[in-house]
Length: 165
Image (cartoon, rainbow, N blue to C red; front, side):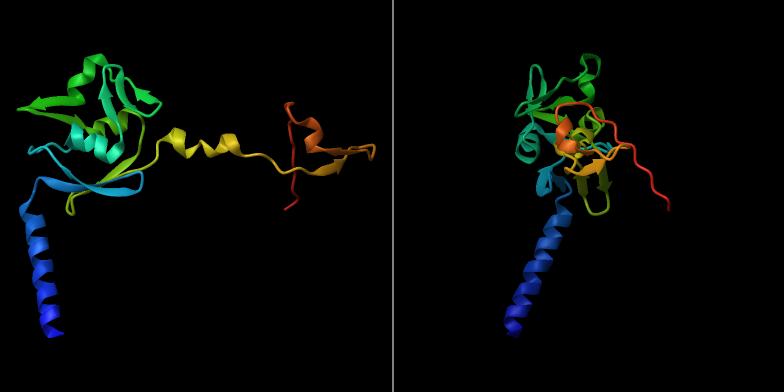
């Protein structure tokens, strides 16, 4: 048992040391999935990753029409292309943090622990509103005649509510 614990401690120490020694990797959490990525060896405060990691982590691909994922495609401003894509040696790098700013996707970084978290875009956050449907209810009008909300499906309805509290 003690041998097992010592072995486990040694493996853990080696893993932590290897992680600390490898300053060119960090963790990106995108769509709720954590992935290790290679980062550009520069002092930039932005997150520059290889395009291969971009596709693996986010499923976005750089195409002539922009940065695309499934049916989504975000064109990159032509006058700002250098802010998003850079070629260093044989590697093409992509600025994921600047792209998040462009598409208004919130993100936060923990520089000390080497973690970047990307939240949902505003369009994704609000997409559930389109699928919300008011529950059916029935209320009397001023003459006592009952009306149900379902009677007005397909029509615009203004509901005015009031509470005494």
